[in-house]
Image (cartoon, rainbow over all chains, first blue to last red; front, side, top):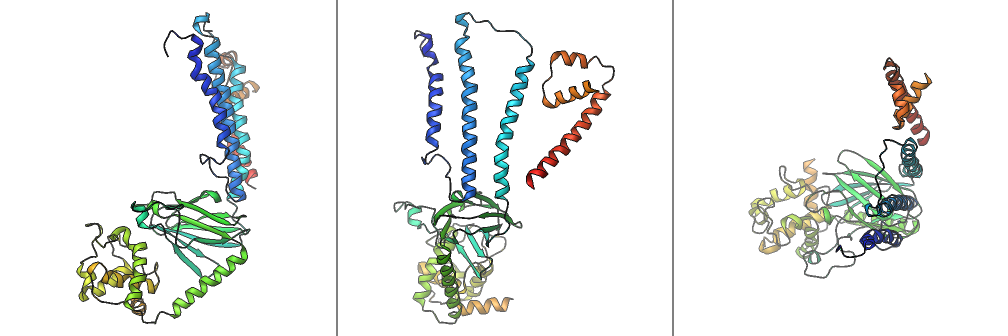
Length: 384
Length: 57
């Protein structure tokens, strides 16, 4: 600021700060998108109020401290003839500025400890769900039911690659959400199949690392029906941003009928393994499976990204009869020393048969070869 | 004895007046201060342990 301005004007920035701070503070409490969400569980709301209490404590401390600093700068400035005081100590002031933070910290620790205790109390749960992180998808297993599935990103590649406008839930939508009942205490067990992931759903107040070889625990009781979304919060490799979480809370009755439906579908698929599939049917299903599980590395057009991810298009292993057995083995058991994982536990027999058929016929591979689910089952049985 | 305890507690808190500091440094031996300091540290650790135990039960 130019020196010719009246001296008091030079204090404008400080004055602005003193006024702007409380104004900004009153804005963050609303759902402006700048603040964390209060969430839909008792725990998440406790966490939110803790966050707000501590935020306001910080605001008050900042106002007092900076207020004193700026007031001193202004009232005792050199041009008014202020002289610096020379003294060594003041026991009373020192005691006050030591005791006051102690009291404030203890006052913050009491409600925080109460919430932490609640957070870790996973006892007396109504149901348990095992959440397993995979590169790059989540697997959910309902421990009391004979029910488990993978939850994959459902955002189409055309949106990701910018050929289409982004949807409302861009990169936050999955093919099969985690369905849970409202009003019940659900215990989550977290682990990982490969590297460290983190299961993060802000509305539930849960962010828990999933570690290979360890089990972490958390719990939730959702009171409101709705869809709550989250993401992986621990950098886990190439597709870290492409493994979202979608939790769908429904009434206990709707949940029960969903479970029955899922079980019936699984049973009918198991009963149908021996049915002979046509090339068209296999190709159609195979393309969906390929897009979800294979395209991230081997690419939509089968071109791969050599040398890390070999091309499947024109690949002798994938195209010719002599490579057929090895192709099947590679998809089922992976290939050690490479990023190619085993899919025998990840995909159903029908999906494996379909995706192999697709790879052997798509992009001009045209082998005319069909792989049936029964053949995969035989191969897996003979391996055991 | 009370003087030594006071000095140790003041050290725990982190504030001591200049007058008391001078008096403390006129003592002939530092050992009462050191021993009381070690003892009070143990008392503090046990007290924090009990507090944590009480808070989590």
